[in-house]
Length: 257
Image (tube, rainbow, N blue to C red; front, side, top):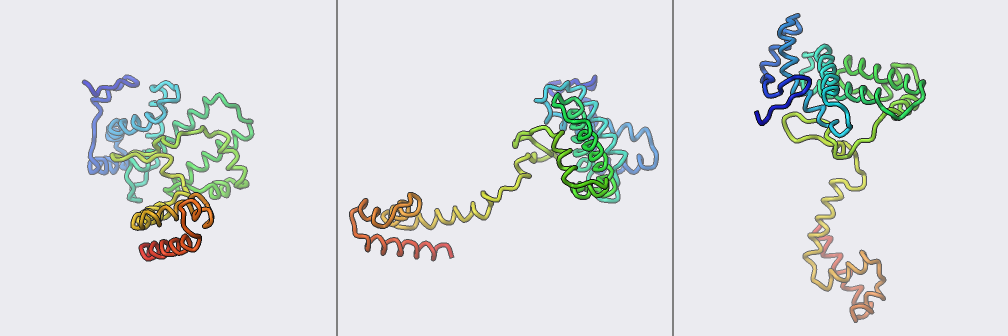
């Protein structure tokens, strides 16, 4: 009873949980027109709906309303799912459920957008849903615009006008493992893995220098001081600073090669 959650009159502790093989067999029966199995399959995936709507818990919306909207997305996903593509149902259904919830939130958004822009945004979303079903993947904005016969820039503007800001730490997908967050899908050209590894290698190479060599490189390249300023600070000649600097850089190059 500790894990019991009541939502829309549904006791989540009593929801069935099917294995992947069982779900595959049920999907075959559903495609053959078995309505009883369809009902069982939907109930068996209500946990998926619950996991999706939890990401919208901080929006101040009634969870029962979000759950019902998520169930609509689940049913749409089931109706449009194509087993021949070899994709797990949950992988296909999660974006559909999220999309349905987002549409609901946009319809109830207090921020006003012009009617023409809003209409274009909804038509773009409809085109996106149709293309997603036909292509079994997320269509690009250019593909959406082409299918509608409008400019790509107009579609981008329309879709952006109805978007809500989200946290970089908001999960966008969860499939019995670690969640994927918004920040995981945002590219960062400044702090790349390559630069991160290079910085580690540079730090390790500097650790192998003598304390005096490290000090000279630090004040020369990290503090930006001239050789004359370094010489004055540590009490040696500029020629000595130059020689120590060259030796240190040469040693680091050998470590980094």
